[in-house]
Length: 275
Ligand SMILES: NC(=O)c1ccc[n+]([C@@H]2O[C@H](COP(=O)([O-])OP(=O)(O)OC[C@H]3O[C@@H](n4cnc5c(N)ncnc54)[C@H](O)[C@@H]3O)[C@@H](O)[C@H]2O)c1
Image 1 (cartoon, rainbow, N blue to C red):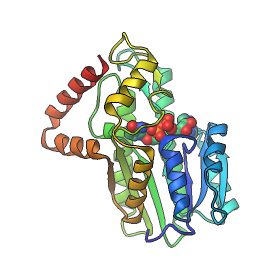
Image 2 (tube, helix red, strand yellow):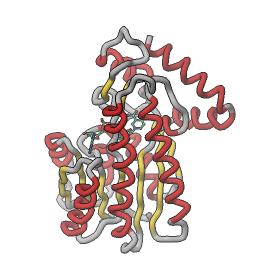
Image 3 (tube, rainbow, N blue to C red):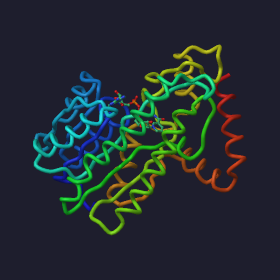
């Protein structure tokens, strides 16, 4: 997509973190916004950060795990903005537990948001995107969609699934006016760990807050603003895949060169930084 000025972008999970930074950075490029989240106060706060009167912004309370609600969101965006050019399926959550012990309730919760939310967002917006001269779908996976880490199995499963889903979609839409990008961020300083359902951290002696602090201290490498700018550049250059941060790029190469060694290395790093 050559320019974002006067385009219309829908962003899920825009009340916090990467979604909020995507909203403010897209607005800075003159892109109109239809932002959504389940967190209404957070969403209003994001909207209040956008002060450019030339940018039209609408807010939508949407649980991405609710298929009908996501389809209604797409309809509402087109009704309120007249069109839509970009959907960024960004909303996501975490679960800390082993695969052996994780409850089906937690597993279904994360799959509903991280995987089905992406599927619904893609299928609901795609017919509208195809009507425009230029359209783009961005699905947020993770470095955990390339290499796993222990006590994070449900999250990794959803993020590997988002990668496969999105890369297939890109093949299928090749030659159309709709670009497709899968994004693999490394450690970004957001609320992702604080908002997660931590049942069992890698270190059982640490509280949820201590694990979140360990994530912030040892694994966060970049800001949400940096992530947003990298993702937006991926849209402008119609990239198939976007790695966010040196940590993600390094782990991607390492995993390609040493697929088995990489999983051992990540297991070691995870335990080391959690102890
Ligand atoms: N922060 C990182 O290090 C990191 C790394 C890799 C990938 N990611 C991915 O980036 C995306 C954004 O996460 P973030 O790091 O900004 O986290 P965050 O917790 O700061 O933001 C996530 C947002 O999603 C919203 N959300 C949660 N459940 C929802 C639902 N059912 N429907 C709609 N919205 C919902 C939350 O309210 C929140 O505003 C996620 O997909 C996450 O998996 C983050």
